[in-house]
Image (cartoon, rainbow, N blue to C red):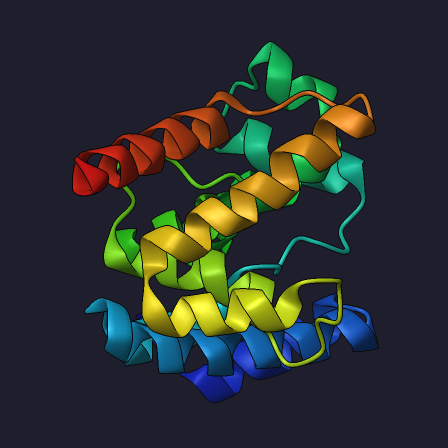
Length: 195
């Protein structure tokens, strides 16, 4: 990874993130490493992707937009309407273009950790769910989410989306098509298993 050890990455994110976000990133890395073994992902890559998943979270919208623009990323109308999604896209671009890390699996896991997508790889699923269950999380239902993560990644993803999508609707925010596609994919799998 072009000389980027986890120790160097920890120092980088410590310098880029607020204290609570830095601790969250360490926690997500730990959770991702543990989930990776259950989901058939590489635990070392899961740890690294967990460290990096919010590398651009505390960057200003202007910096995020600049990193995405320099990477040739054109935002869709939905993405433009929800700047909270930008840190994932900007993070993937930052990892690839600024840090010069060329591991496509890690880049993709960072890219889709907020929205998910249909056809997620084991590593993408691992980081997506690790973000929901990291040690400092204390939202209502987090213990159910942690339990589901140990039982079935599909059940955990569905639980996350059943919580997240209505919350976005209540807040009158747009819903990324990737999240809808993921929801539909998991629902179809669930329906087919029940038949």
